[in-house]
Length: 100
Image 1: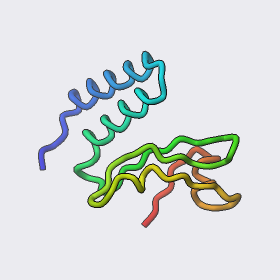
Image 2 (image 1 turned 180 degrees about the horizontal axis):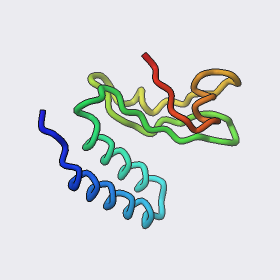
Image 3 (image 1 turned 45 degrees about the horizontal axis):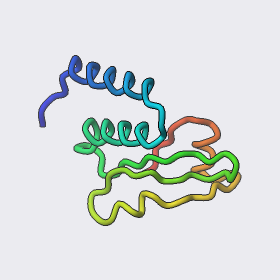
Image 4 (image 1 turned 90 degrees about the horizontal axis):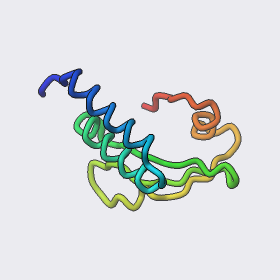
């Protein structure tokens, strides 16, 4: 596997962040983010999922991602968050957690 070029990664990240700052609609933000994540991480990670938090209904709404196989529609499901659940803790604390 080719070693990542740090300068190229920083340039790519800078371009993505600039586009995110300038975007004025959610669809563009999601497409840009997914494209960047796929390009940078899909080779090393079998699953990439992007979801939005719906504060009013306390749930996550899947917006897409990467699967090793199968339909991507599963990544667009809605997940209700229950108090105390691991997923709810991650959303509320805004900190990642490792899942094995």
